[in-house]
Amino acid sequence: MDRYVLDVNVVLDYYDELRMVKYPDSVRVFEYIRDRGTGFISSSSLDNIAFLKTRDLMVDKNLTFNDAKKVCKYMLKEILSFFKIAKTPSYLALDYENIEDSQLIASAKAIGAKIVTRDSKLIEDFPEMTIHPKDFFGYLEGKKIHISMLDITKQTFNIYEKIEENMDKVIVKSNFILGEEVKILENKIANYIGTKHAVAVSSGTDALLISLRALAIKRKNKEYWDREDLIITTPFTFTATGDTILRSGATPLFVDIDLQTYNIDPVQIREAFKKYGKKVVGIVPVHLYGLPCDMDEIKELSDENDIFIVEDCAQAFGSKYKGKKVGSFGDTGCFSFFPSKNLGAFGDAGAITTDDDELVEIIRMLRVHGGKDKYNVE
Image (cartoon, rainbow, N blue to C red; front, side, top):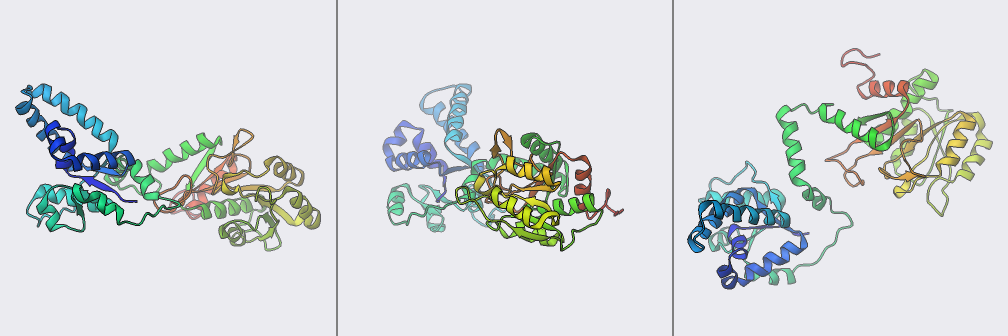
């Protein structure tokens, strides 16, 4: 999807009666971009827009400075309800003769946008990055339309100002590993899911692996399960589900899905119990495509046979089963914040939820190589 940064001249064309008549192409383009939510204003342009509009109002409308400022304040508020702010980054092209244009170019580069401008010099110097309002609709006709199944960039820019603000706070402190923000996130996740604890980890895969290893330590007093230990899961899932069972020392026992839900079939789980009995030590149900598994049946099987449940909630953050959030049924719930998930991170991330005080202590130790502090590993 295209993104456009509007130059000061195009914005002011829309907010001045005489200029609207003189530059109708600017008005049409402004409205087109506004209505589709694809427009940005460079943060460096805001003061310039306010300054020029205030000056024009004082000259053309004979307003006082204070009255002109009030009008401009309302205008800027409206503009920012239409368009997102594109930050002006520090990597300006200072070799360019015009500092204002350097800032505009840097803002457009930062978000991969074209600049809509009437500035002929800017268009001449940066033809690949600029487009004149009169050429705008012809440019659109020549473009192929591509609709992405997932547009993470659009999602990000939708809350860009808030992301930027919070990233600045982190960078100022540079406390990047398990800092204050991680604890805040853990508390929010626990409250949202409805569990006593949440532990942030580096991925959904690590959430599964650490959960399975922690349960081996709690239940067998060993760091890993034995190869003879069977853990039931579904074959219809991402590789990490079965792979982490192997990496925790156990063997995956695949039980097929119910073709109505594509989730693991509780009827076939019971059949697996009958066949393998005490060899089965746990189950990893996967809530696929946001649809929860039949947790009544799975909980009943778990209670009857004293086996653990590790919920794979990688695709189901926020999903509910009979009014209760997934991730709160098992010994642990494992979440992925891979960028394409319904709650995505910048890169990879994950979390483990649990109500078990003993288990969460082991989980937190495994997160930092098996110790309660950095250099004393138990």
